[in-house]
Length: 172
Image 1 (tube, rainbow, N blue to C red):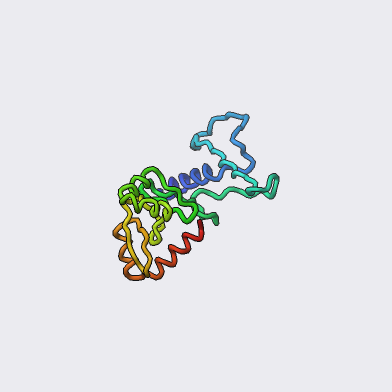
Image 2: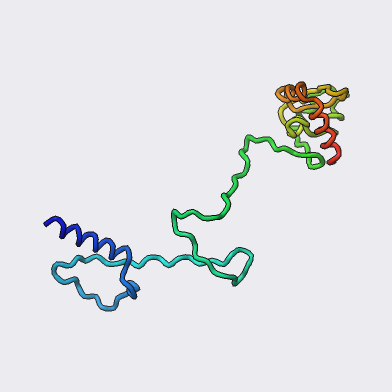
């Protein structure tokens, strides 16, 4: 006895999901269901969205992927968080008012050299972006880094840091 109600329910659900072939949902005859039939109306499934590929007006049309299906498109990249410090390189280094404020904490005789350098050769952050720049010497050269944390890199691999400093200067 229980199998018949389950079968009728299953058929009704499948019929509602699939719809009837040729039924556009706008039936002109509004006859009530006969005794024993349910009054479930079938709702037609939405038509797939069609879009032209980007850059090709009137090009070959493709159906939009179904909801929940994987696509071969690249993920959307998020912009950097507000707390991230921009990393300018070479000539692209433009010191902000806050960066200059940090550089102004240096002695007056050192400020021009730090402004001319503009970029930390270790982190490539703008000098002054993390407060007062730190003056260091490596490989016989004196230059500035953005913070105390960059000193370890200068101590362990000063030659590479000086090479990066020279590369940043040539990019200007």
